[in-house]
Image (tube, rainbow, N blue to C red):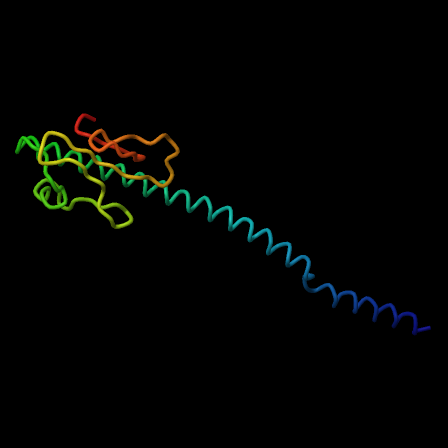
Length: 143
């Protein structure tokens, strides 16, 4: 009579032991969901970084514009090279976040044009009136 009782106990022990972990399919599904969430977050983060760099470019050009106007007020001409001649008006002339200088056209006269190409700007490009080049963000002496 004890034999059926032992069989029942052994089969329930096997059942409990086999249910302690996750199946391979369950693990793969969880890993796929995590990978999808990471890729979505990474794309949003990358776009946010590009927008921050674009905001920095626009802010830098406005700061340079202010220094150019102060230089013009003192000298009645715009400088030929803002990176060497604006030292008294700016502690340091800002550079593009990629490390290059911003585009500056004109100088030594009555007009100038500061330009930058943005990473995320979807608006139509603007034209520098001095050299007719197209850029995403343009500031001239009349702005």
